[in-house]
Length: 121
Image (cartoon, rainbow, N blue to C red; front, side, top):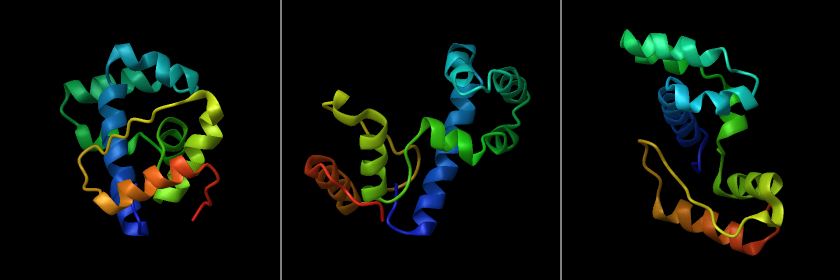
């Protein structure tokens, strides 16, 4: 999550790294299977054993990031969460893996989630 294109790109890069790490473990293969990417897990696992971390992250494309994670501006993130989960959720846990997010951006996300109707900006 970020408030500028540059912040959002940093966030998406961090998510790629995280998904590559998790995706390398056999326990996370079912997550990749749901997205039609089961074959990616053994590839990521082999790269991890060789210490080829940057190559692992490069295997995580934008479509996979979008399928598993939520990214964008605070308003866009809130809208995506509502689209995916509707009224079936009562809590949201945010994780910002290895990149800074301002208190103001988190407050904006929380306000957008509480407010119901949010715009994608």
